[in-house]
Amino acid sequence: MPRTLSTTSPPARVSPRSQRDLAAKRRSRRGAPGGWSRRHHWLRRLTPWLFLVAPLALLVTFTYVPVGNMIYYSFTDWDGVSPDRDFVGAENYTEVFTRPEMFRIFAVSLYYLAASVVQIVIALYFATVLSFDLRFRNLFKGILFFPYLINGVAIGFVFLYFFQDGGTLDSVLSWFGVGSDRAWLGDPETANTSLAGVSVWRFTGLNFVLFLGAIQSIPGELYEAAQLDGASRWQQFRHIIAPGIRPVLSLSVILAISGSLSVFEIPYIMTGGATGTSTFVIQTVKLAFQFNKTGLASACAVVLLAIILLVTWIQRRLVPDERVDIV
Image (tube, rainbow, N blue to C red; front, side):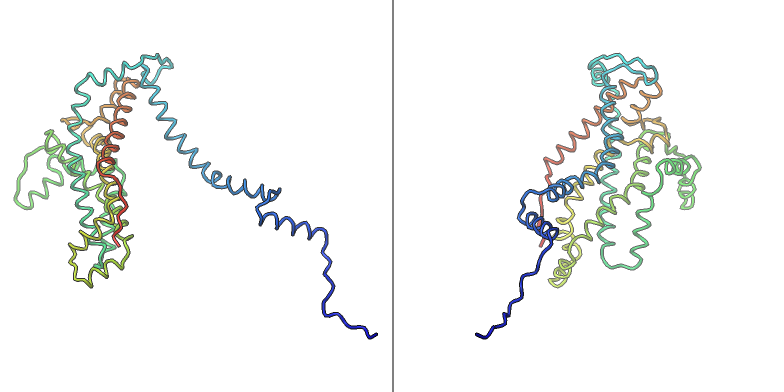
């Protein structure tokens, strides 16, 4: 009988090591527990925390630990120098709330709150204008943002000479025939107005960059569709830009309120808190380093932190962040 040739080749021989590798791959594909898959699973869960170790360590060391120490100091009579820290309970908080001059200086924050409104309006206007295609818009962006890059102490010294008697402001006014014998930093009203104006000059760039980034994140197709429909610039701002930047606008309002309550470096450098320009933070610093009442100053800082958190919570409740679909 003739022998027929088989068209099928004999099965290839697989080494034991290859068989083990194939079995491990099948187990990993099926999700079956195995040594390698288990290690890979824990490594994937641990990797994000390894990247977070350094920032979390810095956050805890330089934020939460100092806040915890501040809260602890607020219940003591520590003078900031001696190692003795006697626990006095809520005595410091009682003194804070029974001294009317501690909260009377919050009236100075109204000047900076009004200045914050002005800087938000100016920043929003220029961010809207420079978001369109204009000549030299990159140059104007740099000019507007540049003051925010300057150190606050340097700004304080520059404007100190700007507002002094016979200084830059008086010289400029004299060019236009306007004589001024007013001491710009010698009267409480003009001093606080001048200092608030300095804050407008410095922080407008920050709000400008926030608004500009939010506006540029809006899809360009919306502007093209609006132009085809004959929408004006004001209509584009009202129906496209304003709804699209609502979360950033809410953030700017929160920063404005908290910043107006915690103003420090500009009035401290320029006036030292004199002539009715002292803020709550300046008063707190003087209690700690001039009168050696670190415990009382810590209580003031805790109260200020609680006020800022309360105002922020109220603002978030009144104006919640709602996702707006502008498409």
